[in-house]
Length: 104
Image 1 (cartoon, rainbow, N blue to C red):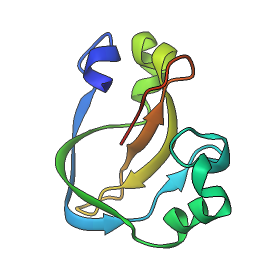
Image 2 (cartoon, rainbow, N blue to C red):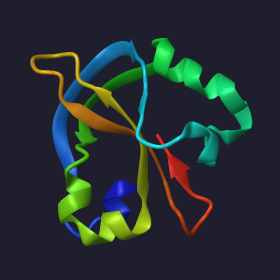
Image 3 (cartoon, rainbow, N blue to C red):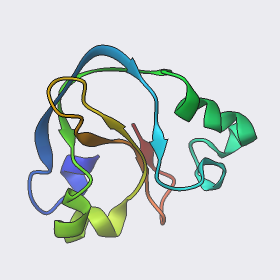
């Protein structure tokens, strides 16, 4: 969805292979489409390593500052951090403010 929405190719090489990670919410998860149904239990995603990641490419949060297409279609709702080398943030979840689309 990020590739479709972006004006430029948004992917960056961000390694996180076969590892479960916590989420770092950028908004209150109880206000999101994806996590609101969990109520306060959504915060378990910040406290525990609950999301399985196995990828080499991702979208870095600064892309939202430079890509108008992506920024106008999606909001970042959480980030996680790479596990190889420096801890680099990548978008873990996003959702559209205008449409019923959300993604991990």
